[in-house]
Image (tube, rainbow, N blue to C red; front, side, top):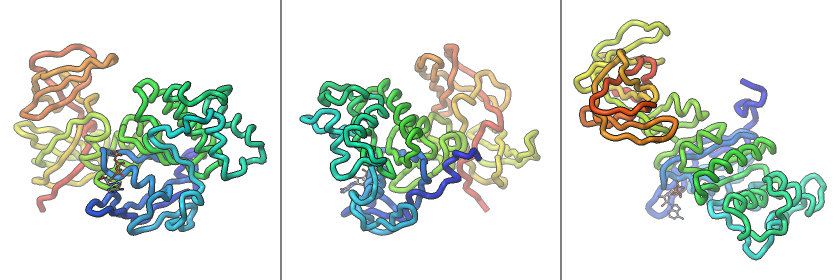
Length: 365
Ligand code: ATP
């Protein structure tokens, strides 16, 4: 691993078997996870999966029903937020409307001396420069764009020099273009400071773009915690395979297990509907009769391919610029492909055995 790989650094914060229950809801269900120093760690998942509650437990706005929270190995489960050394940014900028930009940022310093022995005004200048808003100290918040206001909120959260930055959907109120610009800026600021960051979003694309590691959450618990590439290429569950990016998921039955392919890995012949597909098993073991769920990304489902070929019918298409996302009808199931050329009528699609990724095996014996 590279020297600056966060995977080599000490653990900055940790949840151990943390559960948070409200009256009849279990918002967070036995979550254990650790975030390393300087790591950009993202909680992503559908609405209601417990992302915000997890972040609030880290911040100290909520206390767990069970389990513990540790910062640098020290138990902070009962420590109030203001003693946790965290900076928090929420979805709705929450700037003070009657205060200037500079006053808003300085507010973050009200209870703390600026780090590094600089003056308050010096620190405010430094922070506005960091978030690329130099010279804006005297503006009122309503004279700023949404993205600029959110950068002020980040500067305010960073003002006391916190150990951990917590961001809860900071971009969800912004339009798509601004969001993409701001996420690049947020990542740059985080890298410049090397600050441990936990980020909450429901946007899987944003999660992949911005993070060192991603925790895909479902029903109060992580389904998979891994770097973005691994989440995308090797989803561990059907839920992750379907939640992150487009995917085609197939359920098949093992008819035979063949020898090793060119890459030295075993292959299975899987019966899916009336077709039989050859699927690379990666490091999995299967037996004849097992039910196997595997997925193939749209970009790996090739038009006119001879391997694992099958026929589908074009149902609709969305022009996306660089590519077109085509919806195919296939034995009552929808398949997605990405193409450059328009398609219509019947098409032959296929995929390489090694482009199939097994997500679940239901053993019969
Ligand atoms: P969203 O993306 O919609 O904000 P989320 O993944 O952040 O969702 P949470 O806000 O953490 O999810 O909520 C998880 C579950 O806990 C939900 O079912 C929610 O209704 C419930 N919940 C959260 N806070 C409370 C509360 N204060 N009282 C009761 N139930 C709550």
